[in-house]
Image (cartoon, rainbow, N blue to C red; front, top):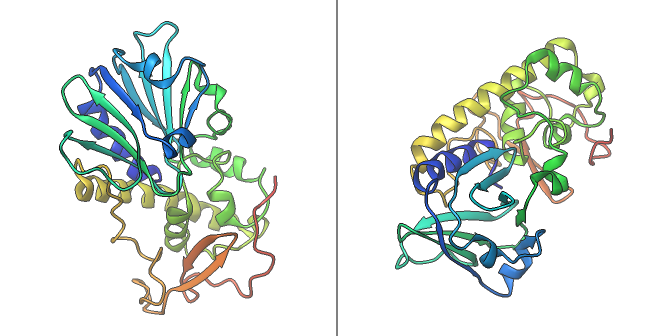
Length: 283
């Protein structure tokens, strides 16, 4: 799943390469394209966007937000890639990624393509981004929330700390992979209860969140370049590194699968005892 570091870099590339371009054509490729496109304007994706100029692109949490400011009223395209969604910036003759579902042809002759192996992502065409429930309910950005606000906000959530970190209504932008990395950096067991965390551990968690996401963004910026379809994660310490030695202590990285989600951590660096009742936290 693309998370804050990957989507931040994708956003930077698209800001440079697409803002100011107009949409020359839109292809929604059935059947998958019809599943992922959610037109909340009733105008149709192609009729609404063809000849419209992209006037801005931003990232909010795990959404990319395209603005078409010349349209009346202003139109927005929100892309939430979810588990397997990827964008590809390509020439028309370039090979398409498997399961390419939507193709936007641009006025400069290039194409922006959306591919999604599992067809779980969504492309929302809206007049107001707040019409999209998941977007409207997002908490503050993970890299913008101050320490004290983070601590205060955390007190309103109950349950296991990894589950809380991945909730967009707590902080926006963190998913399964970077939650593993943040908790490894903070030396916190992923299934520790929030109510068990000391003030010092909460401070470590906040600092680990910032350092992990900032460092990862820099690494992704170098490794991805303009190949925005990539998801470079070879540099990660524990996520998807089951059985490999922990970079800090050398103990083998552990794996736990629960609720269709993989969790990797180091039992030596992140002690936490037996794990019971793994599940989604409640507020």
